[in-house]
Length: 190
Length: 91
Image (tube, rainbow over all chains, first blue to last red; front, side, top):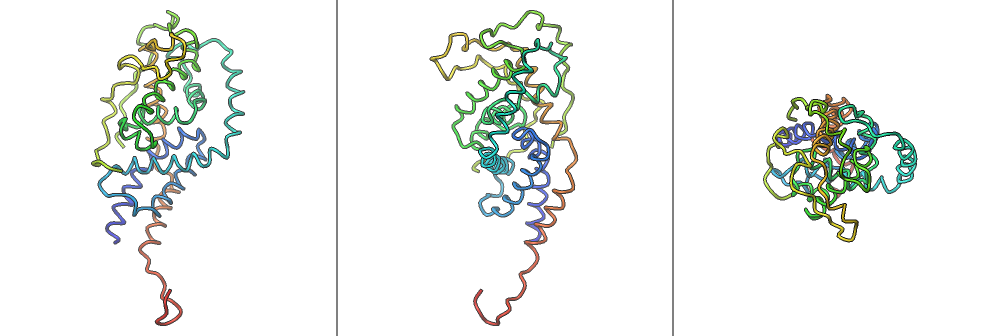
């Protein structure tokens, strides 16, 4: 029993960084994100009987985490709506040039997406899950994930001032030299 | 979850989102312009930002609270239950 426990404990520990990253994307607040992860770990541990060893543990954990998030989100929806007004005022300023885009601006824009679009975008675009895996995590069809990702991409581009709602032909000034856009450095495998 | 436990995908080999074929419009009733493909450069940049936002957390050390939590959960599971007060009785 303890040997099996040690292995699962190690696997859960190894999954914490990814859970924190996903939780942060969902909630946008570090403290709340870590609380979400805490609840996820506790719920996962209590429900280990429903996990099949050898299957995708990370996807199973992600599904638990998002279920907890959504049950809390419905209660906290008012906070999200307050944030919208703040962001709308900010977007009245001229669009930023690529490469000078503030990291915080991007995070704020991400938080403006509806959560189902945001999670699809993060799962597909950042967490390394396949469309099939993301669809399982979110409990929907692969086509639904794809349409959410597409809508999220459009909306994000609009929010960042990179594309107006009516105009998907960006200003030529943004077709700057590729050097403006910093290449992302090497990433650790988690 | 069904399926094999795959090793973590090598994200450096992922195609950045936005560089695949034209987006499919799930709502054909909307304006014609919404079916135009988004600018590849912009979407590739967004793709890199997404990874950066995610990675910023991914590369942080695991906070102590989670190690402590897992230790606690592990100990609770392996600690035998105390003997029942009544002898021979059911639980």
